[in-house]
Image (tube, rainbow, N blue to C red; front, side, top):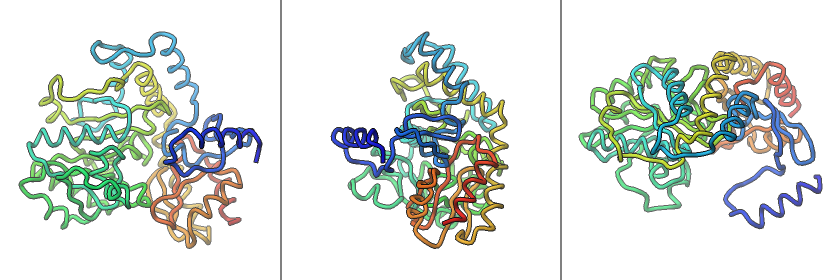
Length: 387
């Protein structure tokens, strides 16, 4: 282990609150699907900084857009109009599902989900929110209250009341929970941190129909699945399912912190000044990054590449003896193995490949940039065969 890493580690450990379990390396540079540590070692990044590097690390178009914007104006608040925010908003609505006509920018996925649930409660006038067992929506108190995964929620009890949890994929249990007090349903269409859990196709269609029938706001948390990762711009596109609200963050700014909430016109027209706000939400630099990022995804055909690369990984993994099955869609994949995934993750790290784990101890999680090509996939497959 290089001495520069030890200096970095000692300094960070002495000053930063101990809330993260960290890999034993310091990433200092990135380009495309690769990152480099403090000693100059190159790693194939199949984790993407936790699904953030959607268009790859330091994509030239995103870097240029951010640099150009920083030189013009770093920040001014939403009290004024902004040409770059106008363009970013229009670009996001252009790729959004039909009927969704407005976006609210904020700073993170947790903030996006807080905003969505506030909107759902106000629109329906009902307090109860139905969430999913195994779901993860963030760590601030509102989004944490909707999180049904592990001990994230329990260790901070009492949380905000009005939340109930049902089994993900169980339409019968969902239907029984939607009484006259239910205002919204929130879910990750793919439960990533729970181990990349995906429901049956018909579940999402029935979910939409029931929420429409009961006048309940349907919220898709697409913080990890949005903007092409699953092989379509948004998860529901595959099923012709349009939720009432979509929440975004992670990769939409190419690495610049930004969150977003896309809202259906039937709800957006009821929202007025003063109901929501975010000082840094939709700032010029973040907006420039969002606009550039969306253009890269379009221009380079990354939605299709995510679908094709995901299919290629699944095909290649079918010949790997240690793999039980592969879950997920596009480039959000969970590889189930017989042993503990953390041991495989560490083995791969030693081979210069970064992957992730989940709350399921047997699931290795992949969330790579959408620019991933077959040659990098082959490197991963060959390393996996040596395990």
